[in-house]
Image 1 (cartoon, rainbow, N blue to C red):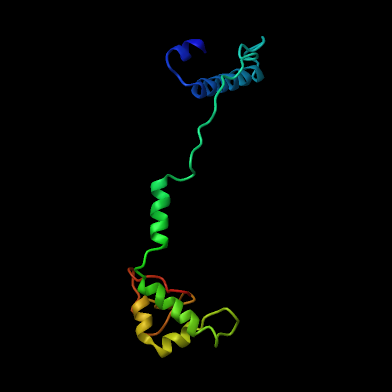
Image 2: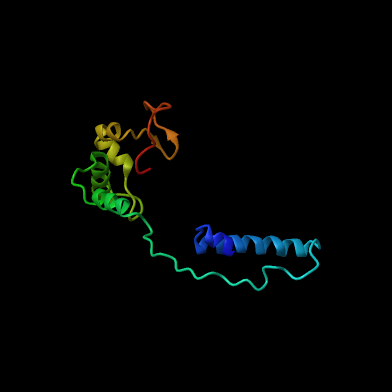
Length: 138
């Protein structure tokens, strides 16, 4: 332990090595390979104080905040929110959106959102293919 400290190893690293060695000796004793007292039995941990660290780097937090307050709106998200606001009043259950009514009233919205499926089933005249996006809000 002292030799590793003299080599410049940090206390936390030495402690982790001791823990690994202690686990190895305990396993060997349980397996019956070691019959004597373990050499790591009386070893004390070296003093170590963990540095305070942020959960996320400050650059990541700054990027998340910038994205949250960016002014450029996503037209697809805006359209989905508009449909949900305008077509939730006539839905079968409160809080749901009547997508079929929205698609009937505004077929261009369906094309804009690439919404060609309803509950997993193809609708007549759909242009879906391997590159089509999943239906928005369905």
